[in-house]
Structure formats: C-alpha cells, structure tokens
Image 1: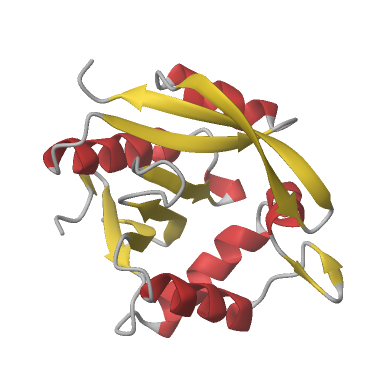
Image 2 (image 1 turned 90 degrees about the horizontal axis):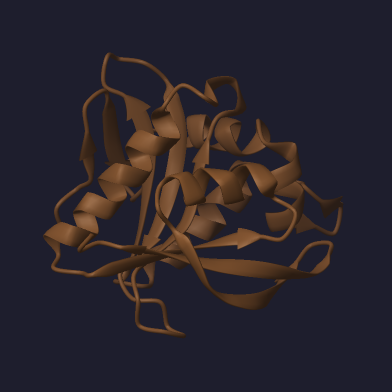
Length: 179
C-alpha cells in the first residue's frame, strides 16, 4: 500500500516496528484533546481515560484487519508527532473507504496539519482508484463538522454509535474523489 504523503508531513505506519517515542507521541496527541477523548475512549475508571496500553490494544486489534491502516503523522523536519490517523480501505457496513480517525495534537491545531493530512489520505484513496471517501462526525462536534465541510465532505447519512458516555448521533460525510 502506498503511504500517504504531504509536504512537511511524514506518515509512519503504526505497526510492530514503530519506536516507543512515536507511540508515546500518539498517546500525547490523544491526551491533548480531552473532549474528543471522552467521547471515544474510556475504561472502568470512566470516560476519557487513555494510556499506552490502551493504544497498544487498539493497534493490535487494527493489525488483525488487512483493510485497516494506522499512521502517526510526524513533521518531516525532525519534529514531533503532530497527529495520527486510522483509515479503512473498506468499511464493513457500506464497503466505502473511511477515515476512521484523524486527530491533531491540541497544541498544533489551526496550523494546516489536519488539512494537509486529510488531503494526503484522500489522495491515497484516489491513487487506489476509489471515487469517494467517508468520515463520521459526532453530533455536537462543531469544529470537526466545519473542518470536514471546508474540505468538501457533505452529509450523506446519520447513524448512531456507542461511546463511553452513551449513544451518539454521527453525521456520515462523504467526499467525491472525482470532483
């Protein structure tokens, strides 16, 4: 599989060969976005709990699915991990490729990294011959809704999902990769 690419960013596969520094950087990204974390992660200690062992558990599960690819997003100029992504070549429910997660470190919001990473992931799917790409946005996450809309993703469905704090409505947004 061709890795996503973007000027200024490097996509590092989160596989068994990834360094501890990169894994710790991904955990730092997750912890830097507490509101998002509370709606996506949790344990018996409550919503929003996340640590290295939970990341490793999630990555081990992802590795079992050949259609799922997780990446750390690192500044090419020897910088830190600024984000991470989880991409599905085929969503089991609709057969369409999805960006399951694109998260940028809270200290790096509004610097163009999210846009550059999203564009690189869309280009990766175009390279594969795909004609559309989807992402889900939780109800109430207005900043994410605005971000994806600014990139041309339009709502095509509304679904529900479980979260650590209960059921959430999710806007399914789709980008026409032929446009």
